[in-house]
Image (cartoon, rainbow, N blue to C red; front, side):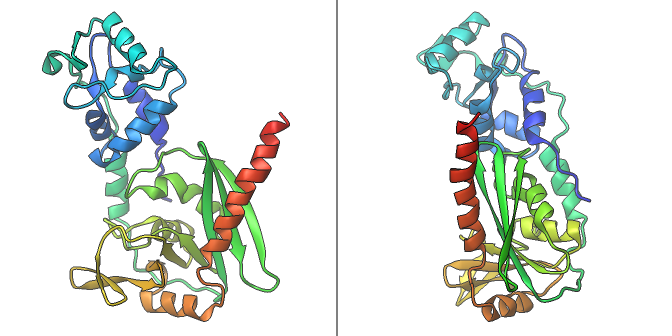
Length: 299
């Protein structure tokens, strides 16, 4: 079982540590989470903060001292008011003496770093048995609520829905922390599970499709909509001299878990509904936009 840290919880715990009279930066907060690549996600989590008096999101600014945005009816004006109330001096839209008021004494678990170290120790080359049938899945979002749908392509075609609250915003290279739990709730261990996302075509060769397969000990295929890394040579996708993906039309196929890339391509080519994840995508969006909207209106 792969641990899935609650990134929202970890982040707000860090945010609460910034004392009055001090500030931090988006990059600083991302580094405390364990990877500077999370800087944009820091901005997203700040904008979602509902308790600014408990979690002082206004104390997070840009690395050059400029204030950045603030989700408040009065916008940055309110951010300036709060910072000045804390004793922070602001001149021409920038925090003065940033080096003196930049907080750095966090107590952090560095969750992203620890997660990356953990998955780096996992053997991703095991083969698993399957029936040959396909199940394809995708996720849509309404705020932090994730709507996952899996479609089975055996006759008669059927589908399953799973709804969960996410514990992480989108962070590049860490999609598993956002979507892994909901995909795992939809996996059928005897089928080949086609997942919207990458398999080994990933910075650490451990994308969401691979890690879901590892956790469930099930055959998985990564089917992504865009190429995030690697070099195209013909239809092949290479990292250095190693082929780790294949273009099929507009889509990118990579080995998830339990199967070779050649087997993944053969299975998808032989099934008439390619790209199989588009059906799960449409159903998840429809459920999100029609059913969840109706449920909210009835409350």
